[in-house]
Image (cartoon, rainbow, N blue to C red; front, side):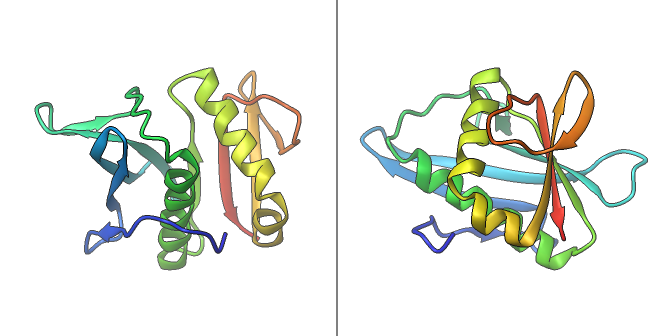
Length: 147
């Protein structure tokens, strides 16, 4: 995905990635967090959303409407790639906070399918069953890892 992304500020352990979305609604702090799933080696949950300064946490339900969705999604993809370079055996688990967000993620995967498929294996979950990713299927969650 050699397209424009936001500059990432990465923590020392390569678990937290921060960037600023810029658009008509101003500058919005975004954060991507990779947390190891409890009791499961090499599985990491990807959390992503707006940084809520008051609550001191990621708000994955926020709708920024800053007209930079593709740039944001490419930035998240860049963070995933950076994370996996540090942990080549890791498996990333991601699920949107809504069905609409999962559909957006699926459409983004489809848009960059050739590039993603050349380097990664991606699976989708439907009814709590993992299956190979299909471009036309709707999913509740995704996992991604290096081939």
